[in-house]
Length: 329
Length: 263
Image (tube, rainbow over all chains, first blue to last red):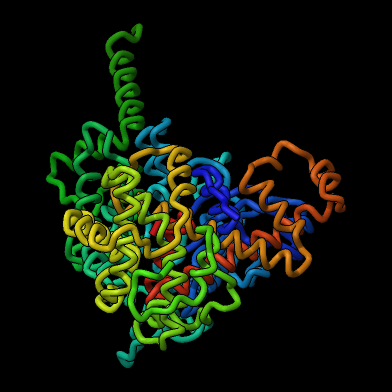
């Protein structure tokens, strides 16, 4: 039997081989949403609850089980992070074809890069940035590093929801206790976790997990001892992306960005809330810690922040003056 | 035919006349627990011949098309070079020099082909000395016919071209095996549904009722049967691929390429 496969047949067969086997599950395949190096994301219909959800599944063989473990780790991490800025996980398991999967909320809307290209003024963008910071700070508070923050991993929902997506590279932070003993902050998953294992494994082969341009220098180097300042750097790169076309960029904002993007972790904001506080202060017209200002600049900022009250006061004083001079005697 | 090699007794190729039967009956294939590369290097004679048989069945079309498209060789020289390449693979034990730590098997074989074509004159002289003897019985006419169907005549970089043709060859072998296994399990309809939907693209404009009526099954069975065939297809493709890679790392990377998953 001779069978020739056309290019289009080849593509269909690739899709067929990649499609998750949902036989006997509550899910029905609707469409493919995206593909990463480890797994694919599909839109599936949950027949029990009559709603569409996103299903993430390992696409390629996983002989040593490292990627399967990492997917499960990812699902457990997201499950732990119950926050309005993080899409919730609904279910996890193994499909009939043996591939591990998890389902999560199907987020519809625009990616941050698409959203920013369409509109949004600087203030709106900075408020979105603050909500990204909220979600990342929440994750840090629960001992989780994202490690892949970038515009493509932030979704803006139709009602203005801001969701930090793709926690596939996330890992648990390691913290030192009062005795200086390093341990994993959350012990529920067990051990160091495959995420960290995979990180070392990948870096040993010369590749680094993350996205160039958004990775902190220590992450690019493959440093295994990353902390929340690596995400601070990525947030700085995100901030840079958001203000890139704002001309001129106010100096305090430039200083905030530069501090977040410092090459040395020690020179960055030590935590995300401190970065967010500076951005919020900038939005509200207060002094920012990253930008030491002189008396003139401080006075001018004070005037701008209180310009309504100052104008009202000036108007009141003008009215009183006029009354003094022109009041009928 | 393996009649060009002294002291080498063919196991099954002597009985074959078509390219797609080169792989022979798959129940004779070595366990996928063992890499074909290892068996081709270190197995006993029978294991080695079977392993080479399988590798040749997967690679001969990609090699021929690569010579035709990338090196822009005419039909007859391309046939000769393809024969010469596999002759060297067997006689000179090219796989013994393959180092999985340095390259994928697919890349290594492509580079060997490049080396052969660049020394084309020597190869031509050797073939001349050997007269018209053919090393393998390969259906070059079908491979030549396939070239006319390719949507991209001279595509991309050499690695992409060779990789794409290897994917096509492997999928063809997997389909052949899937059809045989489905027939053995009395599940021919399952395979026919895969053919309809994924090879011919003829199922998407029909309702499940129409498809079910055509095959004499219940409409609810259409998706179940199709899911089964796709699941088995994936299993067989990965099974075949695994046997043709030298390490788990290479297997995973080749699977990414094969399934169109960006690494």
